Amino acid sequence: MTWTDGWWAYAFIAIAGWLATDLWRWLGVLAGKRLRDDSEALNWVRAVATALVAAVIAKLILYPTGVLAQSPLWLRVGAVTVGAIAFFVARQKPVAGIATSIAVLAIGLWWLGF
Amino acid sequence: MDDVEDERSTLAWFLTGARGIFSLPAVILMLSFVGFCSLTVQAGIPPEQVVFMTGIVWALPAKVILVSSIMSGASLATAFLAVSLSSVRLMPMVAALVPELRSSKTPTWLLLLLSHFVAITAWVFAMERVPKVPRDHRVAFFAGFGITLVAANMVLVGVVYHLVAEFPPLVAGCLFFLTPVYFLASIWHSARHPVVYLALAVGLVAGPLFYWIAPEFDILLAGVVGGTLAWGAERLWRSRREARP
Image (cartoon, each protein chain N blue to C red):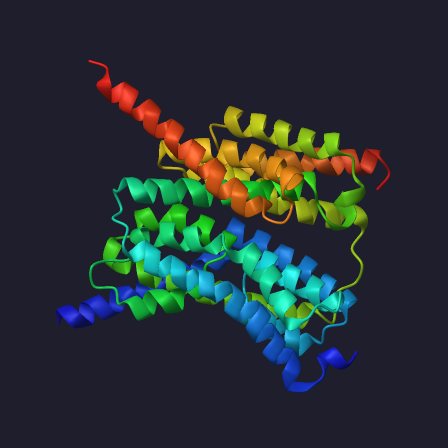
């Protein structure tokens, strides 16, 4: 693969990778500097940022890549649901929710013969 | 004397942030990087370039898209566009974090420099822990965490690249699943504003909905439309409650 030869590969990573991500981070700094930390505008930005991350989470659960792409949807959604119940029962301790979810997923995958 | 005292505690807060490398989120992220490493091995990208990419791009979803673009032989312009579209979300994330991080004395160049270390894990970690740090030391705390996390993952990727064997599918599946489950639990746990709960719930529904309607711009649309909806609803609810005697 000639792509991986020499400086061109690094230039490619720098332009398509670094510039394409840090540009948005810099714009974020410039926008964030104008926001007072008790303003309604910050509340909106906070809501948009949280919804964006939530959308990424939903996609990871519903449309995973790799091994999980072959696992049934009901198992993944079930693991998250049981984990959420454990999370609230355990007075919102993240570790309780995470451990329960992963345990349910592991048992399910094992039972399905993964 | 005051200056010396201040120097010392800035360093102390930097180190406190650096110690965040032993936290649950950092460990989960490192496990995700092991998974990313096996992707780059399959893609045939040499280890030096994977280490370079880890340091300079940092955001994991952006790197996965960059690697996929490379694998499919995309042109520079196409790869740039694909990575840009996936990274727009960094802007509101950084914008929401900056008012929490900076004090009146923080120079803009420092914020621009530190913004590089923002990706989902560092963002969730910082939004959760930064309010407990005295405002004057928040930048040092975040710098300590961010720089350590990036450096540790660059080393990790360099070492693991040569060791990555195929994981048993069960282990690989559970490793992958850790990330979304951790994000969910931690965002809910650390929310200090009612709008965050609502935005989280709306985003979870809006993500798949927009993936179905407009898969090219799903995350962006889910964020802007879903976030605005959540913000509007919470604001309405707040004003109704305040209007009541």
